[in-house]
Length: 178
Image: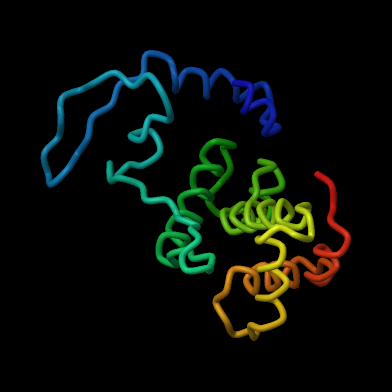
């Protein structure tokens, strides 16, 4: 309930959310066969939010070969699931514009959450000593790689541009404190 409060959800929705987590039970439908009912002690009851009873796949932002990768189909489906979940949670009509849903819920879109985490990691690199391997690698990669590269530091450069932030070298030269 603390996370619900921190998300800015009003008191009138607390009892609804709380009731979803008390004495929760669920079943799994896989290959047309439905399992026996079992108690759910942690997490959200999937049957409440996913009426097809299918496993929900979430986007995976990973660092592979120096690049930030997200599987587009996963990101798209997760974005849709996130919006639908927030609309149901806030009792909004399905026609509510996406921007209104994010403003009312105070929750960032999936892509923004991934960008935020990547920028947090980059900030940790920026705050290291100039002699650190990571910071030296960052400077080298930025100077050597082109913008069409899938290199992680180039992806950070694109994220900074996307949000109209300063140039990447600015953060390496004068790191921001947390």
